[in-house]
Image 1 (tube, one colour):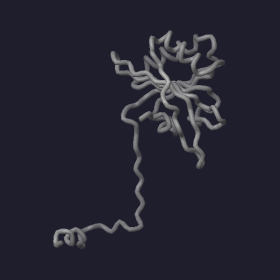
Image 2 (cartoon, rainbow, N blue to C red):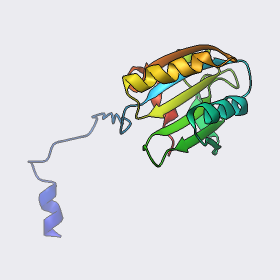
Image 3 (cartoon, helix red, strand yellow):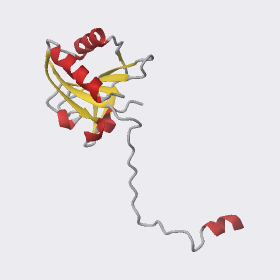
Image 4 (cartoon, rainbow, N blue to C red):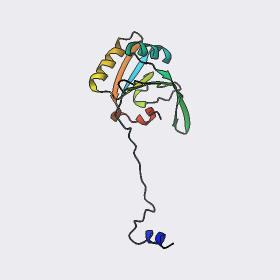
Length: 153
């Protein structure tokens, strides 16, 4: 096949020994709220459903590989059809390995996408008012080292 031989000519770069890195970013920015909570995931979900008028529902657990071991994290999600905002809440440290190392002392991670500064401030204030919430921290997706752990396919 003469057409194939012309592709291997002198004008083609030699890629042998070269290394490539593909960095895949989430399609849109999101906010996370690290929550220290005195109760279980279903209780936090119930409170969020009531306070934010959501319908968080359990999905398959998230599986993350860390140092050749597989860890499972329970999660619930809700996609609001009116606003287009998606909500997801994850266990952060059920087995001693945090889903997000930046927040390893927190029990749960709430992910909201998209979420502007004003919405983030409002939600953080609401979370802090909940009786069983001991502490809340927020972060933008761009500041997270393991944000890929929060991408649900």
